Image (cartoon, rainbow, N blue to C red; front, side, top):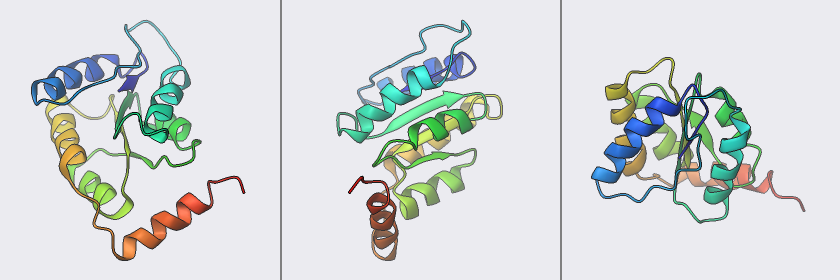
Length: 143
């Protein structure tokens, strides 16, 4: 998990709930609500996912956009900003999203928790969607 100052409170509440459900959480930061820059936390957390040290990432910032842009710079990352359960379900099922970016200023905790539950449990459908993921991954490798 990662957050900047704007996403700190949401990250902390979600982290507690995620741990209660039996998941292991690596918290890259921020570790306070003091002003901070999302790339300082989003990039190291995205590396954990890209390198296979974490199955998925959950990042929080004001709009989710800064974290998504930062994470998507890394090969193998498919970060999405989600603000509804249905968008999240489709991002997992069709896009095999591996980093969820939550807009902390625009979703309440209960909505965010519902989104996280779907993100952690919804499987990737594969099939016709797999070829699209393969095209994305091919275009992010330096060959």
